Amino acid sequence: MLTWVDLLALFSLALGLALGFRAGVVMGFVGAGLVLYVLLAQLGLSGWGVALALGLGAGLLGKSLPLTRLSRGLEAALGTLGGFLLGLFLALSLWTGYPWERTGAGTLRYPAATLPTPIYQGVAQSPFAREAFRLAWSTPWLRKALALEGQHPGKGK
Image (tube, rainbow, N blue to C red):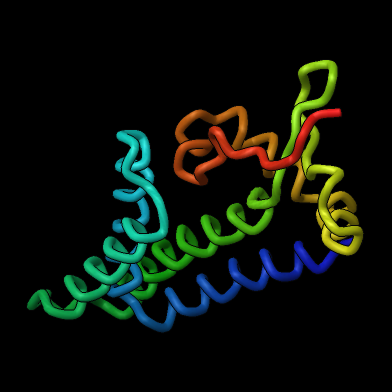
């Protein structure tokens, strides 16, 4: 059964797709900015400020460049790809952004048991959140892009 966390994440993905289809090439530039953010995160340059600057810069670049007119289908495809990348990144951020903790056995517990009960239940009962966290944790470049390294406010018991 889907939880409120899943609904927010899937809504972000759907909104990114719809916005990308509607906006066209501009969202293609935003998708390219997102790829650039993931690459910069590997060099240690990540955070909301970098993401905001790249997103605004890519959007302004897409609006200000005198691009040749593309066919409607190609423009929609580029925008949908950019919107999909943005929506997927936002969905992964929502699924993996909650605190985690190390257990006594040295394994990771996601979400941390110290979360308030409604939030803990929403994340723990999600069919996607733990798998998304496992994927993000086992993929080094995704772990850096989502800023999961070194952040575990939950204490192991």
